[in-house]
Figure (cartoon, one colour):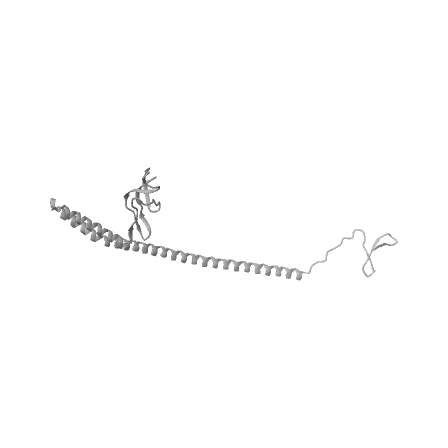
Length: 208
């Protein structure tokens, strides 16, 4: 609250009602901060900075340790996978060789019979034709037995049967009123399956 005295100088009343005189040209002066307070504030700031630095260093150390652990786990996993891949490859190769050996073992007796037949044919005369034919039949029968042991079966594909694209392969097509639609007119080559899987389709000629 302001009022004027007789000399018209501005007078300030404080909260207690006392007059405070503000002369022209007076400038408000900020209170000086004690040196002890400034030093304490600086010390607090330094302490806070050190705590932040220590926390940052701890976080960096934790991150580095985690990365090192992940890298170690990755290298171990990579080594295990490489060992697994090599072991699997060796097992596959061994399995393949065993399978080939098993098949060859079944066919060797047939090969022996063929070689004996060839050797006998060198001393054949005209009267031996019947014996040769009989020998060929025996070899064919033996070959069928070998295929049966290996799980190989002949595909049923005879003339007059209906064409099945899953089992037969049509290489020729004819129009014949005496034959039905999609009827096998002729078989050119037998087909075979091994335990349900088609190894070779029966090659046929199809009508209509």
